[in-house]
Image (cartoon, rainbow, N blue to C red):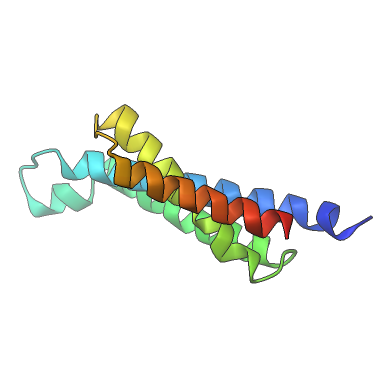
Length: 118
């Protein structure tokens, strides 16, 4: 078994955690866009509680992922969150992409590719 095949399952776990964290952020933004009768209902509603439960689970996934992959790989994989959040922003919140955002995403993806192939 080479190094890549040993690290791949843990890298995939890390990517799953990053993706779920991004989903949780979207859920929290959706909850923040609503009006609530009280501050208590603002923080203790099913959407917010579920989003924080997902955040907690992503922490556990991160701990599991770091057991089998180099610490230096984690931050590289975490940058994929920018890609997920941009896609969610465009599709769910109807945000617009401008040339600066496209360039930034291209640089992030390029950095990931360079790290992965080095």
